[in-house]
Image 1 (tube, rainbow, N blue to C red):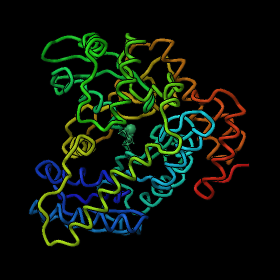
Image 2: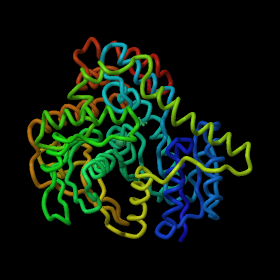
Image 3: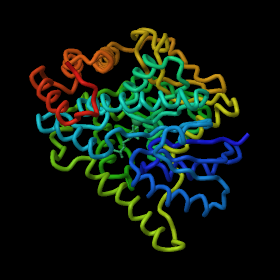
Length: 436
Ligand code: G6P
Ligand code: MN
């Protein structure tokens, strides 16, 4: 059977990489149609030009459909890859800049920027899931839309039966960086990791060739040699520099780099430019490149080369789909209700842990071991603040939102929490539910 795949948020800069990965995986994941769904018609039509070019260049007969209509997007599809960003890059810029004005972390998924995005994202994402329930109730939703713990919590409250898998590529990016920096083959690894999304630690990394846990050795190499960040985007290189410091200070476990926003908000704020943030870099980089590439293809019948390739971001999501389709029971780091996976953490938390994926769905692995108090304490506060935000969304409660903002560990006091909340309510307007 050939599949129909919808890329929701089709206009995203990640789409070419995903499409190239799909084209490369036709033996395991045969596709007859790709649909690009996006509410931003201009971006979607730029992407149409690029994806059409990629399909033809690969001499594939996959049909391409481009739409802003949910019924056309979802009817009859098998898989939905979601990377929608409600409010687009313009609202990301606001999420990053408003907290920075008050001297606190301004980031896409962490701190109060992440909460601002979370409130928008829940609204838009749940609307989309509603459409999917109507037009393609049997389809799998493989989700990249952020902030993933908040999305996952909201979906399970509103649509407990939805067939959704929430995945984040950060752990594989970190593993690839380690493998490239120190000469390992990460395909030999069985990783044990626990946390919330963008908020976790490795417990061990078992190397099947060496037949031992190599995490202590990796930590030692990070402390003594540092990562090789050559060729990385400068912002990411900077993030991994701070990760080295984090590893050096707390050398017992390997952390997710995103913890820097909670452990070193001081350093993050000091090194941020409040008038030119990551969103601006992306507007001037990734987004400009899409426009230019689409223009180039439109104006010439053929172009020399295209600067897009299949990447690990695309590969991760495609591998999950392949494991479902072919009942492969492959192992992935996924975001799932805890229910005992981390024994000493509240059972109703949404956690990121290793899971097996097959045609039945997702089977999380239990750590069978309590996590240390340091990590547990940090996680409990984060879970509670995220849950309060989701409560605020469903109850339309200003008080719950204020509690969520105050409890967020990037926030020093309730005065700042309230000021930022009030300004974000103003800036988000209709993108948020009304809070009273
Ligand atoms: C990683 C994270 C994603 C996040 C992205 C941001 O891939 O796992 O959740 O959206 O980084 O990258 P950007 O280049 O947009 O700042
Ligand atoms: Mn992520």
